[in-house]
Amino acid sequence: MAVRMLLVINKSGGLIYHRSFEGDVDKGLNSNDYLILASILHGSFAIATQLTPKALQLSQSSSKNIDYTVPYIPYVGMPRGRTSSERSKYGASAPQGKLGSFKGDDFFKESFQSWNRSGVRQLCTDQFTMYIYQTMTGLKFVVACSQGTLSPANPSSSNNIFNIHVADNFLRKIYCLYSDYVMKDPFYSLEMPIKSTLFDKKVKQMVDNLV
Amino acid sequence: MSAPAQSKSLKAIGEDTWKNKTEKVNAELFTLTYGAIVSQLCADYDRDFQKVNNHLFSMGYNIGVRLVEDFLARTALPRCENMVKTSEMISKCAFKIFLNMTPQVTNWSSEKDAFSLMLDENPLSDFVELPMDAMKQLWYSNVLSGVLKGALEMVQLDCDVWFVSDILKGDPQTELRIKLNKVLKDEVPIGED
Image 1 (tube, each protein chain N blue to C red):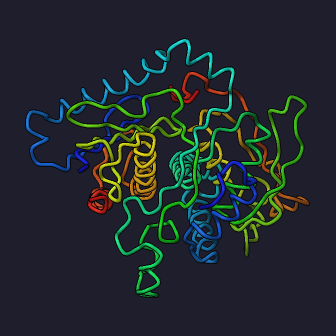
Image 2: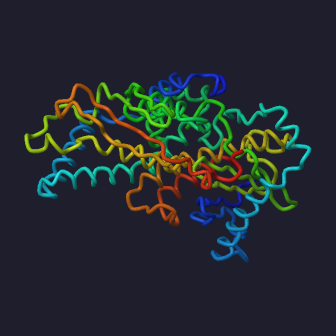
Image 3: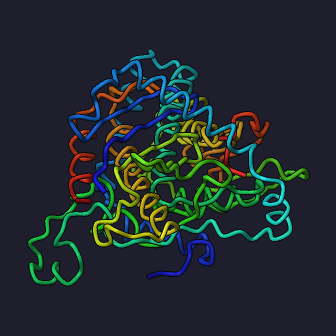
């Protein structure tokens, strides 16, 4: 279930952030390989949108109301002890403003629509499972984990839709971190590699909270 | 768990996001900081207000292309299917979340591709009186047009944004005009439909 790596790919397919969370994953992958991997993902994502089987397309057009809603899954990647029962125990000791410009104890608390409608959302192999979240501006957030699911509460979940939803929740939170710590960094230039230690730190915290 | 985002009105989403999900800064600090920037720019450009307008616009543009990510991460709202929806999104959600105001949308063009936002209250221009020499040319809040231009461009809407009138210049109201040039279809991220 451990997160093995996280990639952020800009709208033109360039890798702007990569981070591996396991020492041995890096063996054999240098930064050039990561760039290639990102471009391949970007390309195959675009190709995959064209590969939807005809039958599926027909059934989609006949029932236009396919549900792309992702339900809110509480406190994915949030520190333990932030669930409502435990918080009331510690009362006011929970420090305010811990989530940057986001108020409250979680980045969002309602279900949302996925922007990624016909692209790859999940890629399963024997070795790892990969999830892709694409934003309206064309940014892709990619996470690879060793087993099927990112859910700490439900580590052996075999409910695949649920796993995708957990990953979408997690990656939208990474997007929230990106909007706060990368976009508001005046020294960051758009579309360039992210070299923010603050972003590094917050991402690491969120990934650690998953375990 | 709350109801799906779409069943709520944009107005309710905007209000909820502003009230419960956004950290605030002191409004007066914000107003005064912006005032300091504008007055410094006027000094730096030797009171060439055309250049000040342009500079404010480009500052706003650079803010907009980044701020849009914040807006999208915060709301995760689906794409607007037409300009009418876009106008509501801007006035009821975007302005609400970032500035706690809801400008009125009026003056639609006959093709429904251009509209005006009436800024009844403008937090940027509280306490402001323009000096005599600036009255004619300076668009004090021009940073807003830049922000809108940049943000809309990042969601593939190529628009022109400009101020038509400003209370600060003695006009009866502050009017911000937005005109859609083109939807940049080629740049819509693949996989959205």
